[in-house]
Image (cartoon, rainbow, N blue to C red; front, top):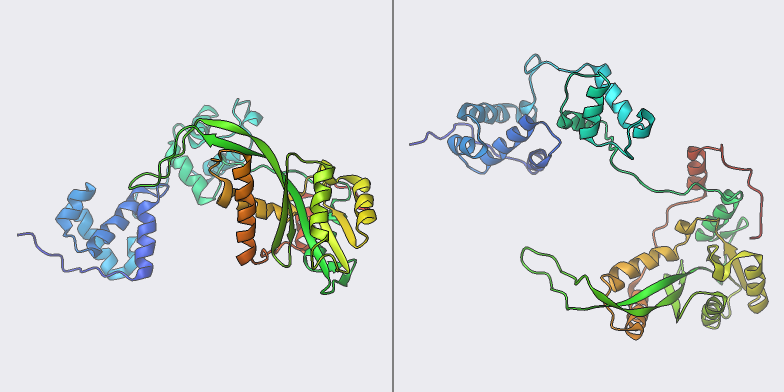
Length: 384
């Protein structure tokens, strides 16, 4: 009969969460993962011999770490001072490899766009930093400093010479401020844009619904049913969307959207309605401002900086629409696509709340200071 261990393990919810995280961490040391699994299995009532067989280790290893945790908790699973194999690499070598990971490979005449841990290990050997080093060791070094050279993010440097001024006044409008004065209850802020090239793609074969062990499956082949454009005006403080459908983008369909909004209450009798737009061809330049004010004297068109649609709140609504109502695309024709878009708009308006917009004028200046003034020109006020 197998002897029951005298060290009965009982885990708190915190300890279990920590151990489960360690047991699943593929970047952690193998010993750390094994110790966590030993304690978790012991807490589940498993005997030492069964744990050893399951994990492929000696039963004395299981007994040691079970006892250490019983006596000292999580701290007992750490290596004791003076124990274990000494470090094989000097801090200088580790720092050199980390520095290499932060540089483009082309700087070292390596024909790669980005490093992987395997390639970093090979390059460290090629440059004579080490005689040999494994990719897993390099990966552990980078993980400790949260460096991930295989990842990248795209961004657009603000090239508009009036970026700060244009962006700041839009951010002020989001806080219900215009030219230093708080907006009244009879003034509104609209974020508007168009979502172009929406396709009615019809799958050639029906998809398969979600089932045990597999996600929803969508047929790869499709028939094209044409495209349309969706023009939307989002009241950022009321969380209300008004939209129209058009065959394509342009000045005329945008004008129709403005009329669709400005002839409805509360905008028809509003003191002022501010329209925040990007620099798309449907509403670009001073000419669009003049058209707007001539047709609707209470409407003020406010342009974002060039390449700054991320500051336009209607883009968030478009993202919600795409994820919740359009993807995965499968519409027999444009009429079905139109019906889905407008039905979702009505449903959204029933329960929507304003977006929790937290990016302010202060955050804008912090961002511009961080990316540096070298390519920034002094901002000057502009009407565009």
